[in-house]
Every structure is written in C-alpha cells, then in structure tokens.
Image (tube, rainbow, N blue to C red):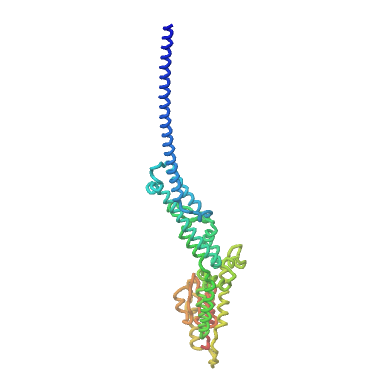
Length: 422
C-alpha cells in the first residue's frame, strides 16, 4: 500500500516536473518567437522604407529627364516634327534607362547628364535639332506673312526655281533632315536638296515688296521731264533710245531677248496694270506656242508696249521747235554729195565685190569697212550682225543684209544721210 502510495507520489512528482519543463519550454519558445517576429517586422519595415526611398528617388530622376526636354509644341504638325521627335525620344530613352536603375543616395540625373558622354551627346543632338527647327519655323512664319502682305508675289515669275522653292516651303511641302556628310540640316523639295541659306534666299526674293508701281511711276515722271526738256527732234529721239536701253527686252540688232530688260519690262507693265500678275501675264494664250510659254512672243509684246508708252509720252510732253522756212539752194549741198561719194567708194574700191555680188558678213564686220563709213553714221555689231545708225535724218538705222549685194546695202544707207537742205 505504502509502496503504492510512494509509487503514486513518485509518479506525481515526475508528472509535476514534466509539467514544469513543458511550461519552461513553452515559455522560452514563446519568448523566442516574439523576438524573431520583431526582427522580421523590423527588417520588413527597413526594406519597405528603402524601396520607397528608391522609388521616390527614381521618380525624381524621371521628372528631371522630362523637365530637361525643351518645349516643342510650336513644331507639332510641321515637317520639322519628325526629326525633332526622333532626337527627343533618343535622349529621353537614354535618360529613363538611367532613372530606372537609380538608387537613393546615388548620382542624380542632373549630375549624370553633365558627365555621361552618351547622354551628353544625345542632349546636344536634341538641342541642336530643336534650335535649328525653331529658327527655320520662325523664319518661314515671318516670311510667309511678308509674302501675303506683298501681293502674294504677283511681281515674281511663279515658274522660277526660287518661287517654286519658297512656295513649297510656305505650304509645308518639304522634308527636313540632316545631311550625314556635312552634319547640317537641309530642305528637300521635289527630291532636290537645298541648304538653309538657299531656302532663305528664295523666301526673301519671293516675299520682297512689290515695287512695280514705283518702277512705272518713275519711268512716267522721268520720261515726262526728259521730253519736256528736249529742245529738238534729235534730243526727243535720244530720250526714247535712252529709256529703251534699260527697258526694251528685244535687242535691236540681233532680235534676241535681253533677260535683264525682260524683267524690267514686265515689272514696268504690271506696275502700269495693278490687276495683272507676272504669272497670269506669262500664261496668256498670246504667249503660248505648242502648249508652251513662248518667251520671244512675250518679249515682243512688252517691247511694243514700251514703244507705245514712250511715243505717247513724247506726243504729250514734247514740243517740237518751230520750223523756219529758209531759202534753200537747188541741188545737193557739197557736204551731202561728199557723204554719198564715200558710200559709192565703198562699192567701187573693192573690185572683187562687183556690183550685184554679195560680200559675206565677215566683210561688214571688218575694221576696214567700219572705217570707210561716213562720219554721219554710227556702227554697231552684235552676235554676227551689223547695224548702221544715222546720227540724224528721217530713217535712223539699217541692219546689213549679207544675202543682198553690197550695192543694195550701200543704197539703203543713202536715205539715212543728213537732209540735202543742211
């Protein structure tokens, strides 16, 4: 019985000790688990704070990248936008790649962009592209305003290279790109490359003020004063010649077109006719041959218009001197007879040029022929043609016809000699 009690008591002690041990283990485990949880939570907090710091830092770098790109809104929907956007995208892509790997406490984008050679290069390319595009866009805008203000280039030939280039640029019908060989930006119009200087020169010409009215008014006033100041027929005729020298588009001797005078003549004409443009004038059916613009017909028309203008000015403003009747001896004067004899001598001196035969144009172009002419004549040669002009008389010029005989050409000069009565 006692043994049983002892056994029971022993068992009770063992059970108690075991219970105490279990409690101690459980307590220790509980306390250890609490410490681990605290460490885990602390580490998690640190990780979250670090991640937030990195995220905030990266966002700041992304913002720095975006804010470093200049405003290009004015270039939207223009031919410049493609090249500009390409350089912007390349720069932003490089900057964002850096921002994506940036960590709090590390290099900022602002520092990186000053020191990273690749990023610096892309930033320079972007800045150059934007600056060049903005300069050209502003230049085009201002030039287009002047073009519209100055009668839309009514005084410019619309088929000229400058006009086609300028109006294509005004209408945004061009490509803008960098020439890889020169590194400079260029315009491409109708598959042809133009430098910035060439394009600006064309725009300057087409947008220039229309001074055609001033040209006509100046000619009107100057001819008026010149004819009023003329005291004899010779001076009046000389006035006509002087003004035709810079206005008549047809070269008198050769019949060719003088390009400088052609431009002056059409400016004169549209100045006289404000409702007419050079483009409309050149397209008139009278100047179209085989569906093409005929410059010779156009020049001849302007030449006639100038002749009519000068003759009208002469009739309106020139007062011929009074003719005083004088007793004139019958027959020719010695001076007139001497001049005729000089012409006859030209025919008779050269036996090889017998009457009725035709000396070649080389003879008329020679110094020998020129020196044998009477002093009453002026001698002109141009592009294989010879014209003799009289310094006075009713008929004032004769163009040598080498297809006719020497005698014929000399006889054509005789009526041009000074009057028999002088």
